[in-house]
Image (tube, rainbow, N blue to C red; front, side):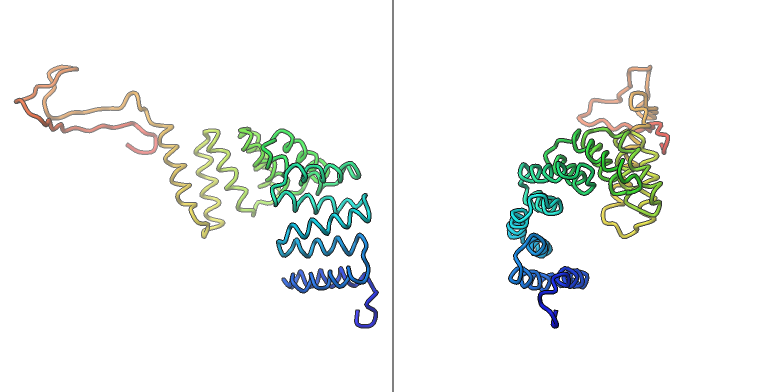
Length: 272
């Protein structure tokens, strides 16, 4: 760029280097220099990305719009704009933009995943599941898509289906600790508490510093205890006062307070 400021291909490369160095502010300066020299779709788009990286989403949207004004078939600009609008919770506008991208490229995985995220944010889980499933067909070995679909199925109360998604996550990447955590949650919802405890403990072993995990393990154990309790037929042994028959006790004298000694055993499979 010192030799030739109009060597435009250098600008996005320099911006990528700066982003990798964590220097988003200088990346924005480079983008703005590029726009000043040449106002066209790519310079506006990268300027939008620069504002995006600084979390200035309204300015990012403005630049994505300028890029689309230059080229109304710029798929990446529609996707980036819709992603920013999703973060701004402007869901209808976000959905409109991502649909524009999919009209131009129906098999764009990023657009399909983004559309599923927008639909999930709108509580439209059936369509969210449908679109993330389309992404899975196109990219079947990406664990992130199964994680997303598992969460959508959880929100849609399809817990057994969610377990299948998290099983796939674990099979694709056995060292991904959160896969066990997510599967534990799904198993707990289906009542498979034994497996939930195993998954929580597996996650704890793989990620010992995760806050709040021990409470979740103990909660799962309490659920297991409650499921196995014979609450309607506990074993009750009373030693004092004496029992005359199955329904009556001999009370030695009139009293405001009656002390009873005995043992109540709930017959849990875990412990008595």
